[in-house]
Structures are given as structure tokens and as C-alpha cells.
Image 1 (cartoon, helix red, strand yellow):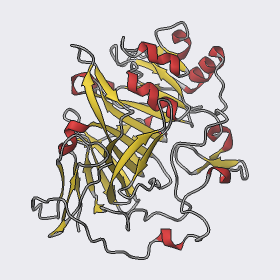
Image 2 (cartoon, rainbow, N blue to C red; image 1 turned 90 degrees about the horizontal axis):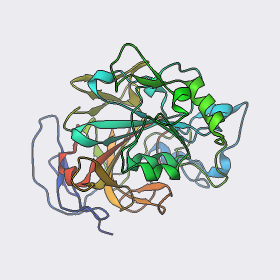
Image 3 (cartoon, rainbow, N blue to C red; image 1 turned 90 degrees about the vertical axis):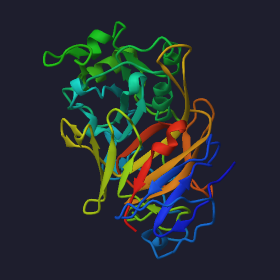
Image 4 (cartoon, helix red, strand yellow; image 1 turned 45 degrees about the horizontal axis):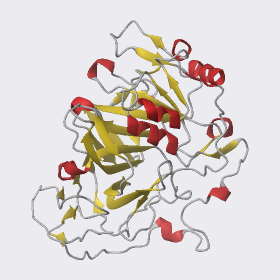
Length: 382
């Protein structure tokens, strides 16, 4: 496994994309307030250390919660999606993973503010589509608009043992739906699970709801209990531990981070007052139906991508280890990722191959073509 070299030059850090099989050497620009640009080559980085909250944790315990510590207390239990104490009836139930449109004609997305984890990935025509993983959906009367499946999303949903909700699928994705419990709008259950709204035009007006999803799950006979082997997807920091990246290799300031998507021009802006990343796209605040979208953690996951035959449909390789970035608390570190077999969990590692620990809260995962690594921008004040 190859690792990136790093160097600090006049307060500017550049990340060489040499992590875990990244195809070519490119650079991520991290500038000071003056937006100076300096080229950097591989070298060792000197990282200043300081006492962090993580170092104050009981030395006999890791700074993250262990699976065996997930126990119910006063009707609450730690969520697999956010790491936060949550209503046990919801957190102990398999979540739904709903495909959502990001076409301008479909905005705002309904229900996306409730998602504990969101995956954003390219589809054909430079458009992105979302998969919102939601455990708190019972009272939602409108979720969507719901769009069709792509192959790679079936793998993302299965990693969380989620029930996958979609309205149709590409021809290439259809065989892969056999690998995940799913609610398909083009099958008989579709009339139970979905409805068409009158305030949008097709295909942007297909929606579901909490009651419709619950009824569909029951009709299809899907278990709502997590598989006995499931132990969650992420490692979450213990209560009170927020400064996770201060002593990590390659750490850099990350006030504004851009995944490089060309159509919606999405980016995340860190607000130190609430400790959250606020999302923007299409030239303004990204609004869900319940308000602006904010998250605690952002993951940029680079993947090898091609096309199916001569079509526009993307074939995204979610199995071959690649590189990326983990961003939280106004800082970012370079990472690599690996997947535990075809249907296993994706794990993210720092430059020393320690698995990353997330802050408790919502997480947004941007899937980015490895070839577009040099379009990523991470900007912060030194």
C-alpha cells in the first residue's frame, strides 16, 4: 500500500494522491486567507501536538465506543447511524435507505434532514443522486422525490443493513437488487409504497411516507431486526471527545471543502459556533424541507469509475481500495478505504492505517471519481 508524503510550506498543505492505489499523482490545494498557491512535493510533515480532548479519555478505554457497550438506558440506545443516544425503538430497527433526486425541479428533498447518513454519488449526465439513510421516519408524510436505483447504491444500503427504497432501476442494476431487501416502485408493492404529488411533474413527483414504508415492509415480510452479525458501520467518539484530528498525520485546516462536482457545485462550510458543516449547492444554501442541511462529518471517498459499454450509465467500483479525505471539526486528514469482501463494510483509515473515529452526529459521504481527485478543494486558515 502506497502512502502520501506531506510538507508544510508557508502555511499551505498539498495532498499527493498516492494513497492505497490512487491512479495518479495529483494535488489538493489548501490555502491561507491570502489564497497563495505553492507547489509541493512528497516529504515528511512535522505536526505540532497539543493536549486534546481525546487524550483525556480513560487510558484503559479506546476513544470510541465498543460494540459491547451499546446497551439500552432509560429507553435510549446509541444509534448505528449517528452514534448519539436515540429512541431505542427507532435505533434498534433497520433503517430505510431512500433514493432521492437532486434535480432542480425536485427541490427541496423531503425527509433528507432526518437522515443520519447521506451518500451522494454521480449518475449519468453530471447529475448526482442521494441515498438518505433514515431511522426516524415514522411521522414523515412526504419523503423524496424518490428516484431509481443504480448498482453501487445497493452495496451502500447493504453496508448499513438498511431496507432500500427506490422507484425503478437501471438495466444494469436490476440483478443486484437480489442482494438487498428493497421496495421497488415498479413492482406490485409500488402502489402501496409510493404516490404521485400534484405540485411536481414526473419523474420528479414520486414520493413515499413513513406509514407507507412501514406498511410496505410488513407486506413484503422483511425483518426489521438487525442481522445478528451486524455491529454498526462506523466507530464513534465517546461523549465529549470532539477534537479528533489534531494529532493525525497530514492534518490540515478545513473551513471550506469542495468535492468537485460540476453540475451542482456543492461545498461544505464549517461553522465553529455550532461545530457543523453547512452544505451549499446550486449557488445557495442546500435546503431540505425541514431547513438547511448540516452535518458533523464529511467523507470524500474516491472510487474508480467507468461506463457500462457504450451507455452513459456509470460503473462505480466500490470494492477496489482507494483514497479520500475525512473532514470534521474544521480539520481534514487524508485517508484510504478498504471493503470487507463483496458485501462487507467499508472501513476508512488514516495514513498510519488506524481506522478513523467519527464525531457523534450526521455524516455525508461524497463518492468522487478517482480521476477527479485534483478537483477536490480543501481550504482553511492556518
